[in-house]
Image (cartoon, rainbow, N blue to C red; front, side, top):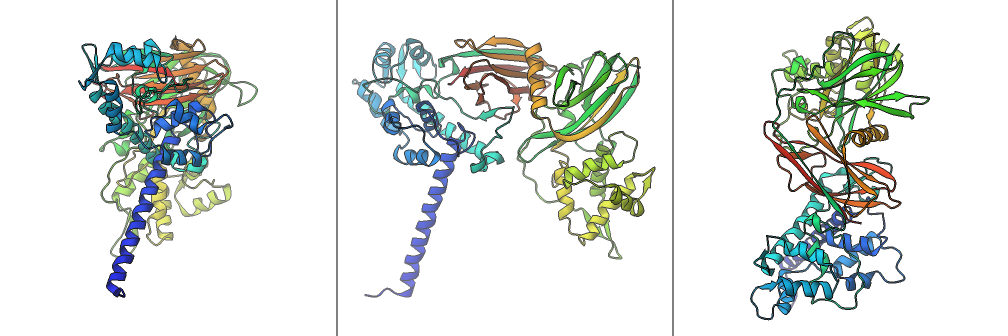
Amino acid sequence: MASTPGNQKATHSENSQGKKSQHAEEAIFYMNCRAAYLTVFKSSLENIKSKEQLSLVLQQAGRNPSQKTINKYWTSQTTSLNFDDFCAILKKEKPTTKNELLEAFGKIDTDKAGYILHDELCKILTTRGDKMTWEEVTSITNQADFNCSGKLDYNKFCELYLTTSEQCCKAARDRLETDPRMRQQHFGNQTENSSEGISLPVPKPSPRVSRNTDHKLPKGVYIPYILCFLSAQSSKASTSTTVAVGASSSRSTKLIVDWQHAQCRGCFYLEEDGEIISHKYRLHLAQRSAVCVTIRPCSIPQAQRKSCHWLSVDTALFILKENETQENLQLVSFTELQNKEMFGWRGELGAGVYWLLPFTTGCRLRKVKTQISGEAQLVWRDEDGELALTKEFRAALLEIFETLDLDGNGLLSLEEYNFFELRTSGEKCDQEAWAVCKENFEMKKNELTRQGFLDLNLMEANDRDGDPWDLWVTLLSLGYNKTLEMTEACPFVIDISAERCKPRIKAISLEAGGSQLSRAVCSSVLSKGEAKVLDGSENIFIYTYRSGSRITSVIENKSENKVIIHVNNEQSKNCMNNRGLTVFAVEVAPKSMMVSQHVMALNEQEEWIYSCVHSLVC
């Protein structure tokens, strides 16, 4: 019997819906694959090069690989596996279910009592399957969440494992979703020459992923998944650091002196990928002199009546001596004295040229997801149909003008204006174009006035017949959101005082700090901080340094091999860090050092405790 058009339509609709559902499931599957892969590797183009890496990345995908499973996919002929191979493995190796776990434990718990005696568990785990050491077993039986009176409650154990496994996968997905660089699968999540290293949001990776064994425990009771959520003390090598910091109070360090003085403004800008760029400066001293250098967030007069998010951003300044070339810069010192929001340094500098590199940790200047309803109006038409700037937009433009006015003289020179052009359009304004500006907009002494700057932006609006698109491009690139609040930028001011000569300071560029700043930060922590050897690994050192209201930790790897360090801040109280993750991991190249994290108080009016465990993964 022939189908009616209605039946055919319904069947076609069902098939279409089925295909859409299948495509959606595949999309979710591959997103989870990528998320897990990019917690261990910089790019999905990077290959898995060892059994240890295969086991680690499978765990990040919520799997429970035994040594037999690893050997099935990594044979004696295997030299590497790519991302596609990894996805194929995940399709075959399904996540362990609670029923499978309980069934496995049930084969040990023959009395069906719901628990296993520690002595019996220790005997099994140290003699069968992927054998553990006595210390590793003890670290399991010491966990209060699922142990009591010499017994392991395996129901609670299974619940905690499944919860932690899902949290592990969710953390990977969240990281992928919020990090633009990670979303670009074929380009990786970090640049190859990044001196800041690779941030791997691995909740609790297993340090023991390769065992030689001829037997196995019942399905589900393998060592990797047991260790994947244990505390960092079960790792091969670890060290812990705790620093208690009282609530902030008004600090009285004197940082203002009555010497010859120079001042320059600048700004931190937050890039789309979370990188922070700022002005860089050259300081010239005609002769040796005692010097005082300070930096602080800049209060803008036009913004005093509204919330100024940037005033709580931490700032610092690193002073480097220029030798033969700009690339060969030597760290002299940095601003570690503090008076409220101002950071400073006092000391003596010889005659010559120095570079001043502004720095902020990124703890408070960072990408924040906020729901913004509506969009501020930038222009309007008067009764005659003429375009005009709204009051709110004028106020924002005057704030921008103050930020661009680096020397604070109330005018914009061509050099100052070009920082604006480079930031918003990537191009410079030459002398010929500046002469055209002089003909059309108000200037004094060949410098643009506030009114001239407002008129220039009004002209841009007229060129677009009132379309604000280009204006919004400008505003967003300068750190403003759609409600005209500056949330992704921080204006600052640098003051230099010298006792014996007039200091001269000049902004040279607007760019990321790069390797020079990274080396300076690491060197400052190594020279001032407390050093600890990672227990059980004589070539890895953890340095911790508190400077004013922040704590910085640096990892130094003196070995010939790269290492992955697991970082756990779960015991910290009232803290925030620049990575935005409580638990993560970092990869440190051979013979190198890198920042592990910067930490600050969430609420400075309350005590905060930095408690961090660094553990060697591999």
